[in-house]
Amino acid sequence: MIKTDLHIHSCLSPCGSEEMDPFDLVGMAKVSGIDLIALTDHNSARNCPAAAAAAAEYGIGFIPGIEVNTSEDIHCICLFPDLEQAMSFDAMLYEHIPMITNRPKIFGEQVIIHPDGSRDTEPKLLLTGCDISIMDLPQVVAAYGGLCWPAHVDRDANGLFAMLGTWPEELDVPAAEIRYEKPEGLPEGLKLIQASDAHDLATLAGGGFPLPLDRADFAGLKKYVTGKEI
Image (cartoon, rainbow, N blue to C red; front, side):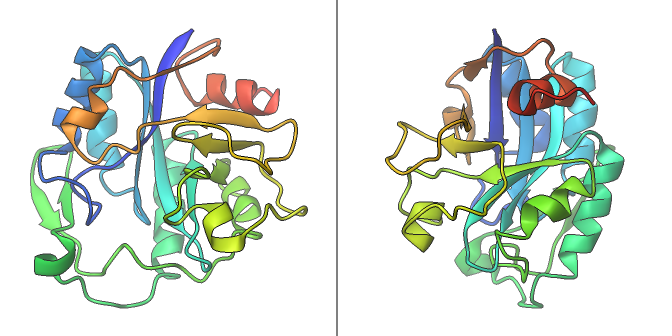
């Protein structure tokens, strides 16, 4: 079994703690015994290069990702096979987010950490919904080689059931993320992915969630979730 945590926020997410520097959060994952992590900031992958560099240094598996806020304001986990695909998707997604200026005193800073340790801040608020529907998002993500599924479907805030009331029959995803327990109404055959949705180091220190993966990387996850090799 591979211990995973496939939903983690860094200091780039407005709701993420300032302590969630990509280098520090990867170090905490390593100390906590997690084998494979995904960084999934709201509507951005721009802290993934630093996290990837830290993961390579610490010897831990890493998948670049984004938690996309759809047009319905449903949160979805989107994971990519490499940084190039993730950053290409990031650039596309940025154009689909409304130009609302972040207000740090209300939402918090959105800090970008570069692999060399230098810092910038993102001026556009990343918590808003993009103009891509949850019904279209899986196909858009697939065009970048990625995987997509709804986040925290057992949660009231920004979960699929909370926003839509039911699971759309036409929704083409291989998995669903749950935080605590499987809710009623999930289609049969979906893989269930547990994750911390960590916004601080204390939550990340939980030790991860075991999955029967062949290897601690995107290829291993894709094979488990879809049954297909890369």
